[in-house]
Image (cartoon, rainbow, N blue to C red; front, side, top):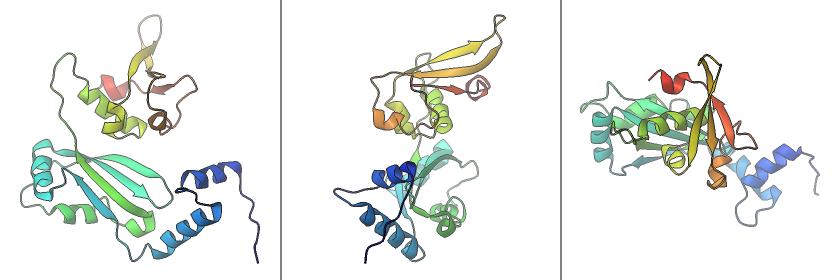
Amino acid sequence: MKQTIEVSTAIYSRLESLAEGFDTPEAVIARLLDNIEGKEDKKPTLVFDPSDEDLFKHKLIEAKEAEVVLYKIDGTREVSRWKANSFSETSNLRGNLWSGYLRGWKSKGIKNAEFSILPKGLNLPDDDTEQRKVLALELGLTFDEISELEYEILENSSEDGLVYNLIVQFSGDNDKDILDKINGLSENLCINVDSSILYSR
């Protein structure tokens, strides 16, 4: 016997975005339930970039930071930055992760985790590596995603030069799938950010 469940348009859109191939809404819901019921037995998959863990560890010691992307069973993700200032040759890579970012993974619903070494800026006038790293974190994007986008930064300031905030204006030629990941992006493809994220550095 079939039952009818009414959901809002927003929830239906979220279910639709999780569909694989020709999945029906019922198939998507069933897969989500399976994930939830089985999450206690399946630890998150860890992916490193570079993929060789010894090389990753070596580069992390040099760079002192890495990008962390946690993927959840509800289809969302969290992008953050691992400041590994105290990480050393004697540190246990996976031990640090399971006791740190992956601590409480069951209750947090984490299914996959990606860890990537970020490039360092070249300290040259035309190098925007550090700026893109800051913006990626602020906008919830990965460094690879922000690196594919074209944008300009404008100042919203008073007549006497006091900067209220910055406006990041994205080009309409950018990848729409990446732009859709930016919460708060206006129809004009711009978003306000605090000036301190760039000017205090």
